[in-house]
Structures are given as structure tokens and as C-alpha cells.
Length: 311
Length: 314
Image (cartoon, rainbow over all chains, first blue to last red; front, side):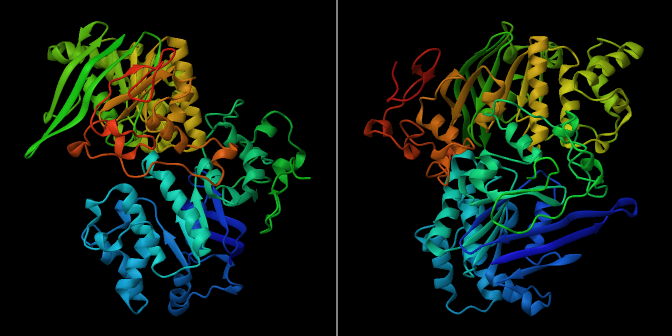
């Protein structure tokens, strides 16, 4: 459905070093599939999502939708964005406080010149769980609760009848008791409408709650991917193992020292080796510090980019 | 160590008042870590601020806050200043905003020492070095400015400041919110070690029950300005709200939550328009008819546990 092939995105950095935010990624989101892209801040997951939406142009590599490479002309991007829609975090920041709910949801259909605007808006609101939709038409964001605002943002994305949703931390700014309902909505949209979704998050519990597949990103690369049950209950990559080990319920913690690294200075060899607990315990190999790892292909089976864990 | 007795906080606004905290009684014995959980609007941060009288003038605070037997709410201003930092100190969320961007880290850590005349000159410098090493930062960081530090390091500096005057109680309001998973784990490990080493009491406030359960001996859950449950963090929750809050953060690997996110219908109530009866009844999955009319106080429900629900008994 939506596919990234050997994608690189670089930004000019301080002191002339280029920041390799996305540094070689293959990733696909299949029809009706929910993929969670997890990683810490600064790992490049948001840049990858923006590039998949056509908001950022890759330095090299390509984004393809339904097998056709994305072309960066205005017209092609407009057609693409009817199919692939973004759901932002922080609904308070992404909704215009002076627009009514109706205006907010009607914006997309207007830009794309869809006929019968009112019924498009009503049906999008209803699908996002705001029922009856007419009751919400004239409301302003400040009159709504956090959960309702996030539903309005989702309705805005649904109004164009997209095939893929890209959701960046869709529940990060919501209250705990409300978040389950929004996640359940994403699952229902997949079941009822066959929507695909790429959910960008730092929250492994969220991935466990809704994702079919998980891709773990570290410093611009995907280091492990595969079906959610496999990756989250039997992680192979030492970074995934460390991430899961610091969840509150887990018995043996592996707390990595240091901060998430700097994309302007990607270490040689395996990019994780300076923080790797296997290397620190002397269980690494000579290759860890010297030999770069190949980019993982965009498959659905379990894959690991590690000199030690790889079969 | 710390005792709250029927604490109430009301904010005066144009045309009325908003009851944010509606009678909270709690105690944190010496050396104990208590977690206070709740969602936005539950009143948990108002509790934290009321403890050291840090609320704005528009807030009316009632009840008693006893710190080592002394009532903070009726203290004279001079005494209150002495109590802040040296008896009890606060670590806020959002470490980026708690530090002065144009002053060096070391000077900021030394400030409470100098203000309280606990040290000066070389002695203060040595104490700053000691504090930095306690929170796992190298001594040369004393000469850094806040922008040269990462979010996790800034939060460590905030903790060093809170420790400076060797308080017996630390109040930590969402100390790890906005930090990455791995950095959060580092900061929680640090907090756990410090309270164990120094025998400090901790009141930690968070929306995330799993983080609290990780660090604290006992947990208290707030909803709509009241406690709905207090109990040991090792046991099972009995109140339907605490149960729902706990289920909202699934355990990775638990088959029951796989592809089955759980939450509550509806939203936390507006403190200005609280529902009658039990404030939780409109969202409660197991509410009875009486819940709409009769309010329930905390009652015993098992070993060391109290919960405010009609369905809960010994």
C-alpha cells in the first residue's frame, strides 16, 4: 500500500555536519494493516512519517503508494493526500480555535472540491464517534473535551475517505482513561473501513494495544521489525530488549547509560554499539565497532539488524 | 512526616468558585514513598502546590497540612521560607522551565544553600560537587548552562537542587513526564536510590499508575478532587476507576489487552459541574441506581486499603 525504499532524509546541521535523520529505511504498510513505528525522541520516526506523507522530500530513495512512486508536483501530492492522511498529536494545537468543528472538518473536502460537503462532514464526524454529528457542527474546540477534540482531528482526516492514516502520537496528550477509546476507534476504522495506519509512538503499550506489526527505530534506522507478538514478547535486538526491560512490570532492567545519540555523528560500525549492553558486557563481536549493518528489507517476518543476534 | 487533614482547595473565579480539592486526608510516614495518581482536573497538582503554599492568591485553602506536626497553612511567612527547601522541596515537571537559562548550573544548585545560610564559599562549592555526583552528573557540569544539558540531565539538576538542603520530604510532580522511556528509567532509578539511601519521604504525583507503582510503597488515586482509593502498591485495585486507570496502560505481553485497548467512556468531569452522588457514577461501568444520589466515603476494603465505592467491602 504505502512503501518506503532505501529512504534517506538529511538536514543541514550545526557546524557543517549533516543530520542523517532517516538513514536508510525500508518500510511498508499493507492494506488494512496497523504498523507501529516506535523509538525515542530524535530517532527520526517523525521525519520518516513526514516523508511518507510527502511533507518532506527524501535526499535519496523513494516513497511509493500502490506501487507508483510519489511525484512531488502539486497536483500529484494533492491526489496522494486524499489517500494518505495525517492525524496529529495535541488536538489543541492542530485545531484552529476560531473555527467551528464543521469548518475544521470541511477544510479538506473544500480544498479537494468534494460535492455535498455537509453530508461528507456529517459522515466523517459519525465515523469518528461524534454522534449525532449535527450536534457538534457549531461547537468550538474550547467547548469540547480532549477526547472529543482528538476525534474532530480524526474526522478531519477521514473526511477525504483516505486509505492510510499516519498518526503521530495519537493519544500522547490525552488523559489515561480517554486514550483507550481513541485507540479502540483506530482499530474499529481498520475493521469497518479497511483503513491502514502507521502509528508513530514512543509508547510500547500502545503498540501492544493496536498494532499488527512493530518497527523499532534507532538513530535513523529500523533495527528490528516483525509481528507485534514476536517483537514485543521475544525481542532479538539488544536495543528492543533494553526498551522493553525498563517498562514498569518487567523484572530485569537494562537501563542504557547516556542520552539518545546525535544524528549528525552516527557511530561507525553498528550505530547502537556505543550504548549496547552486549558490547558493554564483552559479549559483542569485532564487527560491532567496525562493520556497518545492511539495511533491513521491508518484509513482514521478524528481522534484526545486529551482528550478535542475527541468525 | 506529612499529614493532610481534610485539605480543600477552591479557586475563586468570576461568578463563583471551582472546587479543585474536596477534602483529602493522607499521611506519608517518614521514609515512605506515596504515589498520588489522577487525570487532568483531578486536583492532584493543586494538592502538591497547597502543601507548600505555592498556590495563587485566587485559591482558598482549607483543612490542615502538618509537616512534622507543624501546620504549614497557618505558619508565619518567615517560618514558611525556612521550611521550603530545608524540610520539604518540590521537583516540578518540565525541567526546562524550572531553571534560569542565563545562570550556571552550579550557582543554581548552590542558591538554596546560600539563601538558607547553610553553606557559603568553598563549602558550598564542595556541596554542589557532592550533589552533582549523587544525581550522576560529572563535577564539571557545575559550569554548564541549562541549554547545554539534555532533558534528562536538567531533571537531574532539579533533583540535585531539591536535595541541596537535605529535606526530609520531596514532592515530585510528574518528574518524568516528557522524558524518553530510557531517560525516564534512569531518573526513576535515581529517585528510588536517593530515597533508599537518605531515608527521605517522597510524595510523587503522576497520571501514570505504572510509574508510581514502580517507585512507591503506597498509591492514592484521585478523581474529581477526592481520593477514591488508597492502598499498598503491590495489591489489586478495588475501585472501578482505579481499575480502569490501571488498565489504560496495558502490560506488554498480557493477552487480555492485545488488540483490546481499554478505557472509560466519557471524560473526566468539569470541576464546576460535578455530577451528584458519586462523582464517578456517569462513567462507572458497574454503577448502581443509588450511585447517582448517594455519595460514598473511603471505607476499609482489605489489608491496608480503603476505597470509596458502594460495591467495595472488606
